Amino acid sequence: MKLIYKIILASFTCLIICIYWFSTISEGEYYRRHSPDGQYSIYVSRNKYFNSLISYEKFGDVAGKIHLYDELENKVVACSSIDLISNINELCWNEEELYAESSIRIKLPRKINIKIINQYKKTFPVKYSWKLFLNGKHYTVNKKINRLTVKNEKGKIILENIKFIDYANNGFQVLNNYTEIEYYNAEMKKIKNAPDTKIKYDDVCGNVTTYGLKIEENREFYFLKKAIGHTNYDFQDYKNIDSITREKVKSIYFLNRKRNLTYNENSQVEEDVIIDFGTHFGILSNKMGVQYFDSIDLSKIPIKVMRNNRYGYYNICPIRYTELSPFEFNLAKFRDENNRKGYVDVNGNEYYK
Image (cartoon, rainbow, N blue to C red; front, side, top):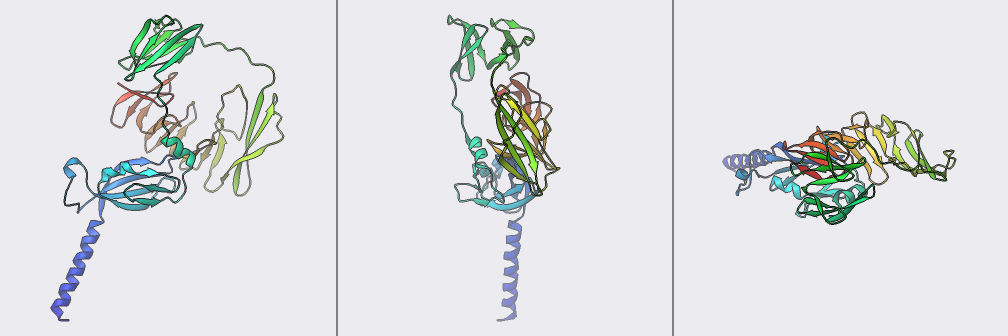
């Protein structure tokens, strides 16, 4: 082969290599969101130099790369090309992989607990009518196009065009049409402040079922054990119900910050286990498996959690608020990433101002 052809071939090969190398360069971080349990996140970056011939850049959409980020190991563990970066919203999680119908398949280093995925995808039936009972009074609440109407026993409209109503001590808490909190007594008369008289309950006596939990350990594992008794708390027969590897665990305890927990069937006590890894936290529940967070706040119930400087309440609302206040009875004030304000209720429903 003549020298000139060798030079041309070498130059062409270098050109192809350079084009390929430049085509793999991407920049930025867009559409970041987390897996249902928080141990992974995904985001996309835009191709820096090359995009498709039909460009959607003027619509804010271009080709790029998907990045699977391991939140526990603090590193990117997989990448894949994507035609339009907005298509990241079509990706779904299953127990072992991140996938889309367009044949994108990214294997996860560790499995996601299937219970969390099922809860993540779960939808709840919408109630369009329900009853409120308090101090011998009962009211009917009807919902239409996200607005509520409250009627008394005779069918007379007491409140209308409100967004939310629920019990608050010996009265009711309401969000009016302007997304402002108001309070009403048991007779559905508006009052200035929250009712300060709590509903009285009769003491429960007689035989009750009691529960005991404890955390024990050996060289490799922490063991979560549970016992069930009657009336007293002198438990003898503890049984293993779960185990956690000791690897990277700094501390482990229940919500009372101890490794022992007792309660009876009349108490509303959560059996969640807090796992402190030093750089992040896990919350283990029997129903949901482990979910991971940057930080948690156990000073009040429900548990306030944080990931990437965004806040939420554990198993109640999404972790996407830049500001999130404590619950005032049934409602917590928030400001979201789009600077919109509103309230979230104890069931995770949002009400914007």
